[in-house]
Image (cartoon, rainbow, N blue to C red; front, top):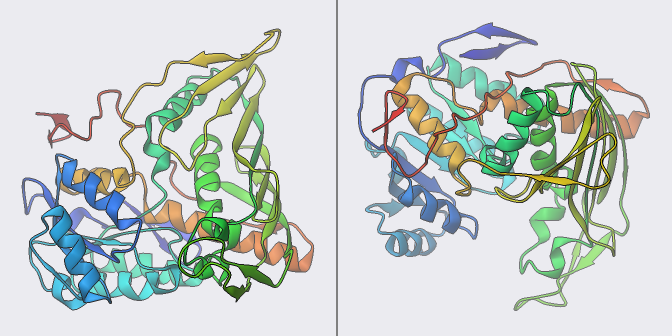
Length: 392
């Protein structure tokens, strides 16, 4: 596997030191038992090659409740699950501000780490995390893993097969009036490390990198509509809270392979526009489904066509946790996992460059690329056990 050293990619041992030491399902502990953990726990319990062995949270009652609900044998604080030899991968679902500290503690306990997005709030912190993982021959994986869903995998195969010709440009847009309308505790989504760019942006940017390759430079513009928001639902409805980050980001993106993209991410629009993505090539335009989902229709329109043609979707839809499963299987086979720390670090650098560009008013380079994630095999099935890379 490649690892980051300074500002270049070099060959390294990440993950190789763990291959062959264990067999069977990979033991997983979920750290952070908030709302999103329920989806992860349900899916990881259903997948053939993962086994949830621990739940941890700062709120012990919440960890115990999650463990009881999903039949997980161990619950407690972070130290409890890190001390458990059955835990091979720590799934870090804590708030963004805690991602680095939890991931670092897991690595130092000898565990592989798969985290929710973003990998880190600062590019330099992400570099430190991947460097430490490489030094310990451990793997880092990171959300989003929606690009492993059937619909985006179908899009990737179409682009790779030349169905749209040479990719030229992309348009991507996600706008609404903000999560405080439906989220009962939305403050963290308006704090440092969130906002539409860091909260929603990773889905769209990861999809663009999946289809168009790594980013080379960006230009960004940001705005904040108002300094205060009001919670619209739940027991705290009517509560006002401060907004700490920009709530609208527009950016121009150039990719190393030569294509360009425009992206709009906003919590300030009274008109919702979610999941709008089009990739235009020399032969056709591909309409990509919402990159925040694992499913959705795939459509293509060639020059001369009077309308869009829907393309059959093939592959595993499943849901959140596919990246953990792919990483778990890679541990057993020695292959690369796709939702990698290197990919996540590239997305962090891209987002931070957009923010800095908005401040200085110039195009800024994204210095370090990333390995392009390979498409999943056609017969990849999360519910069929894998041994040696082949279904049993």
